[in-house]
Image (cartoon, rainbow, N blue to C red; front, top):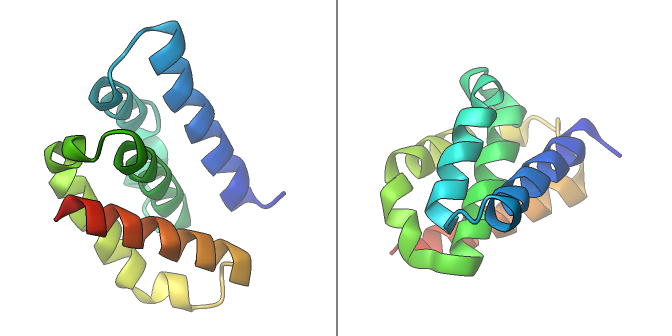
Length: 111
């Protein structure tokens, strides 16, 4: 398993753990994960993309209305994605395809 997918796995696990064990709302869970994975986000790059895309995809899937509270972070996600980082062959074809699909859904639901 690639480091990209490992990080996505940890984010998904934390996201649902907060919802189930802590009885958080979708927004509360996203907020908590943004805090918990703040180091990865602050470093930027693929780690930030993995965290952002995973969290906001889950939010878009479960409660798209909540995305509006995270517009600033979603803008950062889009900037990271559109940078050369993604298109520099750092991600596998499958990883890039999944990331693209997630970001497309996030942006579609944010409108």
